[in-house]
Image (cartoon, rainbow over all chains, first blue to last red):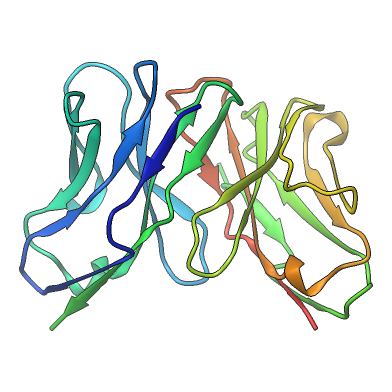
Length: 113
Length: 114
């Protein structure tokens, strides 16, 4: 079954700095990969997804992610962090065995002024 | 499109009581999912429906948990004889029957068992 691992449960960056949140997946078939963001006491919102085609995908709020099959990675980046980016970010993979999304443990992004 | 709606937003209950949560999905979506999220963790799959049929249940879903989706519209999740370990955020999501589509989540119901 497919799974994801998010390295770093907490990441702290300064406002204006590069954001890099790491996600590695395990899958025996071509994966469908997703990044979600969760603000306090809210549900999850889809940031971007990779299904097929272009390996660099762009999402909302200036985020993008690159699918690298050789590294089994799908890291999330943003060139310049804003205070409003402070939230919890989850990587997910579509699990063919159960027909559902399997989520990583999440990374809390903190942005310092 | 009013999104996925969950009620109540918060529920505090005493240990041993029964609770029921409701989820109203996006009307065009035929799939509905329930996840549980504890503090500092990612969402864990509980169960899902395609239309009115419950197609998959996690081992996390003990006999005290039951979910229904009558007529393939809204869904309810009931927890009987609640325990302190049931305290969590319960998330509902809906989607089309397409693995590339992704989910639309509701805001969740936060359950506190005291």
